[in-house]
Length: 210
Image: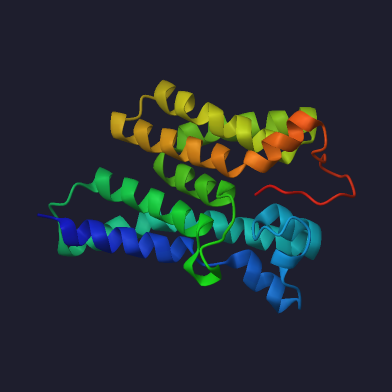
């Protein structure tokens, strides 16, 4: 009955998430970050190649994409379809935004790893679970100086954080899916971590996460 609402939110969230922030900021500085460093368009590669101000801009914009998708698009859809389930609309928006970032149509469906966009989604959808996973990320990062390891372990902790904060079962299912997706996108980092060749934060080698 509300297929139109779900499709509108899914498409809008995907397009919002697909905005290739890192690529565009790099281009504005005369650099295609896909051809340098890790080749990733996410915030970590932007930090290393473009500097802190540009990296912060990419990080915040990518996070805002996720938050806006969850907060704005379901509300707009509800104007036309007021009886559409708001929880389902937010879940569709959350997944659409992350998939848009990870597989952007503007760059031949090659995007980032979704960490910043997922953070924005979680801050809007499950703020308490987000704070727990953020704490995990910061703790692991401070202890290891591996951005990739911190991202992977924070993603792994997300379903448990969602569960202990008593989120509804559909939300737990969505955060579990986002967790699996984030870890899947970090497969090369996992191989390097196991091989002892992954770089640490502050080293001269280029990061391959975010």
